[in-house]
Image (cartoon, rainbow, N blue to C red; front, side, top):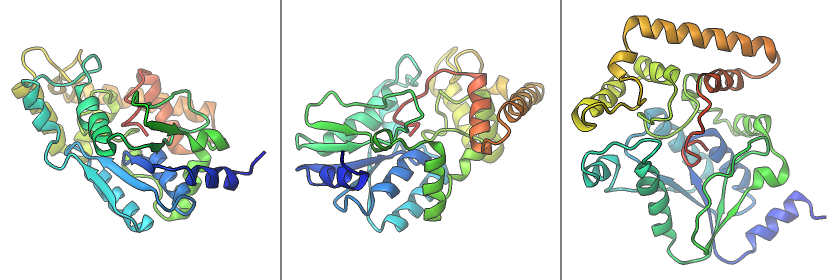
Length: 277
């Protein structure tokens, strides 16, 4: 049986392009760090929606400095608003996820063309999801963390040892992606309002100016309703209660894991695999 170093060396010697798709989240960042010195020909990509958190752009800049390699940003001229116009003002939703297709999948597949590609994916060994797997026969997914059994503690250690640490938004939000991602839980929306009120107002404006009658990011509740003081107080009470339950149930777990579990307890709907890495 080959050692991890031997396995990665075998990967690196395969003909074709070797790519890590970055989301601005902890797992894909840790994967880039993990592979940096082992596969020197790696390319690093970021599909920019033009609607990312400021913390995300800052984190990617810091990662680029650490890697000492450029992070190629796709969608230079065609961000979210471009495709919103192309779809006649129809905002994306869990049922019609044109944002994932037009801003993540298609730009990546167009960039690599028909060449053989080894696409390294940062899904951990302690996760029960497969992530995005292209249907194009020339794009081959590779799952290093699953292969070598790396879990959340390992990812946190990689990030701390690099000096990057976790993205700062993890204190109130558990996924990267658009500021107005419709998979956000109510607690994350409140976090957006408190940390970036101007971005919350932009998301609210999309509901009234672009979404049409009765369209809300959260489907069952408008952002105007969600930001009412009594509703905000309710959301915070419920989140604090769930967080305390998680602390008692798992007293030795890191705070990021407890916050994530508390948010998951509010809404366990699976988010976007691409944006969640």
